[in-house]
Amino acid sequence: MGLMSVAVRTVVIYFVVLFMVRLMGKREIGQLSPFDFVVAMIIAEVALLPMEQPEIPLLRGHAPLFVLVALEVGFSYATLHSRWLRRVMCGQPQVVIRDGRILNREMRRARYNLDDLLGQLREKGYPNPAEVACAVLETSGRLSVVPQTWAQPPTRRDLGINAGPAGLPMVLVADGELVLSNLAASEKRQDWLLAELAARGLRIEDAFLAALSPDGELFVSPREGFRFSTAKEKLKRKGRT
Image 1 (cartoon, rainbow, N blue to C red):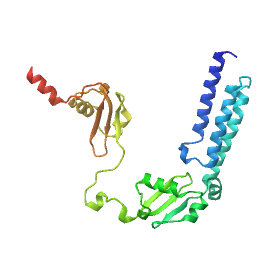
Image 2 (image 1 turned 90 degrees about the vertical axis):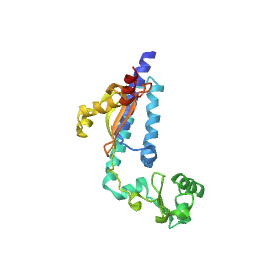
Image 3 (image 1 turned 135 degrees about the vertical axis):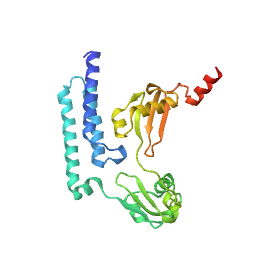
Image 4 (image 1 turned 60 degrees about the horizontal axis):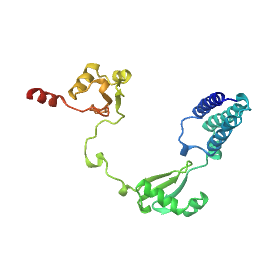
């Protein structure tokens, strides 16, 4: 088999595996259940066979992949409707700290050692277990920490500070291109955006990112290498000339 045929087979297998992974859903690697993790490992191994052995037909090499993904998707839908099956397939969260007290029996059941616990507590910003009201070892292997009330940082409400509206910034310009759908959703006119950019000495194509925050502030980041100048600086230069 020639080099071109090998390249074509590799491209086909790449897109097939990518399609399989997309079918498995949007989950991080650390959030995969044991079944999902095993399926992902087997898919990686099976996908290599048609590339390493060109004599294997592509359809025959892909058949196990479709079977594995069908099993994974089937079990995923089944666990949506069966709590018992979720416990069997994914396990259950375990409380390892309660009211600042480390539950060593639960840690032994989870085969979770003290060094790992203290390390993950430090990563969460709680090096002292006494500051933890509850720590839960999730089924993904991550540690969720609920601090004691006296160890929690004060909020704006505690300090009596009025908080602005919460939400995600709305991207109006991305990589020098106007995002019309977001501009319409923001209830802002294109003339307003052009004026805001012009006040910063920019055009739409000069802006790498322009995002409108929930409180109405416009953040603008120009393209790399573009000299950022405000309208005031332009007026100063004109006055000197």
